[in-house]
Length: 368
Image (cartoon, one colour):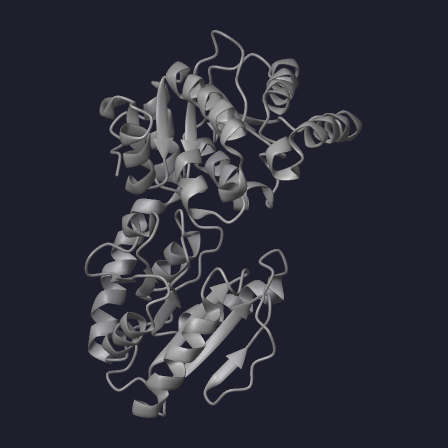
């Protein structure tokens, strides 16, 4: 039996680590008969806090502290001590190194270069800490047998920003955390029903969605908008707020599934979206998406399965919502999205990872 370890900062087999991505990868790998274990690079709390405290004093920044050479070396040491004998490792990101001689691939949804350019936390990294961490990540990528990415956006960064050979970089995609079932094809005269799901209200551009929807409703008063996530109190015509819905609670997961089933269009034009598992979940329900044009969403929301809009552009968002308020267009794009969603099953992701590692189970698997 092929032995695979998933290595991450945090328990890779816990549902809340890396948005559940390593846990999904473990499921996909097991579909091909692999034995999967998790390796947590998180140092013991006392040691971690001591190193962070010293680093913060030196750098005068808690943001910088996690990415200093000391932090990188500490996480690498923890993994070295916890990693058992395996045939291959899937390393989530590149926040630490693995022992010499380890056969591994990296799996990333964005690079440090991309994060610094687009993410509100990483953009605060000082030049010195960024440069030092960047050098260590380049070494991690160089020693990997392959570098796997969720999207073509991140794959392009590894080639263009990090100078990796294109043949070493593979787009494997990611799978969903939640698999709502299609509710059936909407009626020909179905009223537009938009769905927004996002924990980070401002970063996911929730206020912009509300503003564009209010304008749309002047033209289509029958339109409705359901909002799920960390939203403020909502009191606007046609808008219903549902608050956060936790997928580990059966009743709330069922409610989320019902909302996807009732929707005719999913809309989340985030400031930036490295990938966006929720777009896959919408597609599984046969629902087209309006997504941000910044990030890796184009790998999921391909032409004909939805629309991409620049973040912050209300006119473009309103135009996209008008287009997908047409039931015939929504049905056509929703069916195309449902067909494309098959590419993102965890079983297929697992096969692509095994292929990248050069291990049994990946034969015939096609990269995206």
